[in-house]
Length: 167
Image 1 (tube, rainbow, N blue to C red):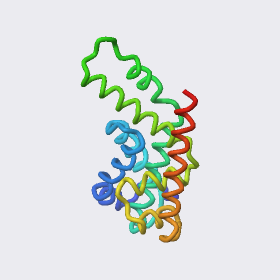
Image 2 (image 1 turned 90 degrees about the vertical axis):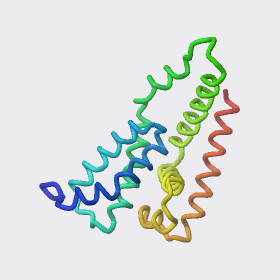
Image 3 (image 1 turned 60 degrees about the vertical axis):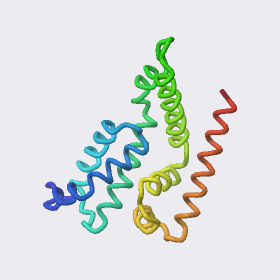
């Protein structure tokens, strides 16, 4: 690991920041939290010697891992509890928003219970990375990305169904 910050960090940051925030936002559902994750990710990247050509893949995987760690750590518990305790007599639009938010939280919670590799593959693919980019980022063959993503989607559905039936 280099002792100082890499000289190409600013260029890589400017090119990759929107994608890194997008990956984190897919996991977290919050642009503000995603920006915090992106900041952590770029700070870590700045101390690496990852080749510039592999930076985007490394950053996207690191952002997905970091965002999943945030989900799993329970730091968002207070926000979820506050959203769930909406006051009675809310208008239908607010009620629909709360229901949609709860559904998103349910999906994120299920995603956090998936095996790490599946969760990351699913997030990267649904964040707009191509099969080749996901393959490079996760050190998979491009042919296995589709299978990995399909298995992840299936596992996510099973996880959602399992927790829906236990309510």
